Length: 294
View 1 (tube, helix red, strand yellow):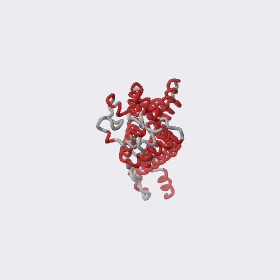
View 2 (cartoon, helix red, strand yellow):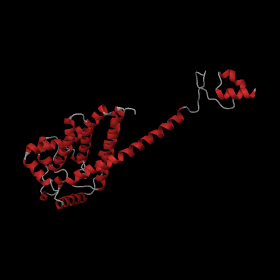
View 3 (cartoon, rainbow, N blue to C red):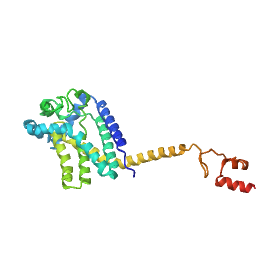
């Protein structure tokens, strides 16, 4: 298999991420609907005794030594670790890179579908009566993010703050973890592969950016994306093969070169024996037909 070209991969990943970002921004939905979805998730978690967000959020709020690093991690790690793992795979595991990259892209697009179909208010944007504190706002003076979102100050309006379900922070971290566990050669890399998605899950809940079920949905999206990776690769190969065949059909344009010719000439089946000496050596079919004529 031909090794992927770095510039083509960079362009493809940039295109998919730009489409994801634009689609995520456009899929805002109705605020009231998003709040209703958030409250429904919270009620379901309470009924199932899965509500871990409240104690984690209190811990991060009351302990800046935990809350501030968690906010930095939430605002930056998915922009750093995910590309770093992609580059590592591209350089060290080129044979596995294409499938891994396709898995990540398919899952990301599935996440966009989730944002569109189910806009969800994160815990930090619920009414204060529900007991959550927005740690990104509380510790905004420590970092580059603003009070309204994890985006840089002044750019909060350019993000969709109601795209909480599923959590692609957790989804991407899970993908990174699987790659590190599967292809890492040292115990340290394998340990990071286990720790990173678990730590990300704790961070997204403790900062009140996601519910626990958002994290579960992020993992489910990655699972579905994994199942769709092989069909996606087959479809891409089929499209590439069709385009390649079309290119081969038109590249000659009917112009052939036979033995003895330096410049291609377009020959027709009506060539007579008298023309042969002027055109050089005849091809095999022409020679046979001429022999029969004599």
